[in-house]
Length: 125
Image (cartoon, rainbow, N blue to C red; front, top):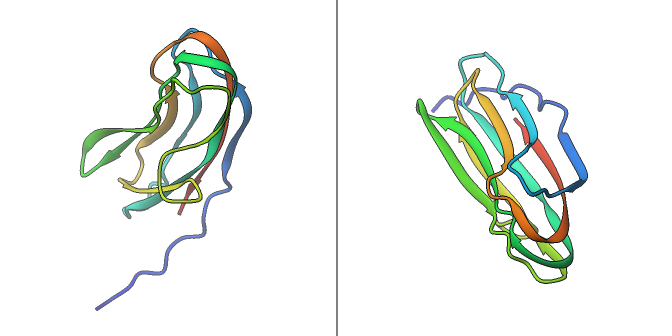
């Protein structure tokens, strides 16, 4: 069995206290390295809700085996308080992405009621 040495991780992209909106903004966006290798994407973070939400779903968009993927990382609709992004504790989700393809964290549904901020880090290895 041959194990390729991974490239050094790219510096993490971070969003701190990004206010969820009555819209569908892109929160973070980048592209995987163009080195011919699959890349591990790790996402960690939380949503801090100050008044109960309606809407506010957040997704991770990426490509795997040439097919666009959209993975929900926060379901929105929280009551007041702190909610970790969905994934393995402590709020860590990993996905394999194709080389030289876009990756983004996007608010996919508008936050029509309530107030919340998202803090997240996106690491590509």
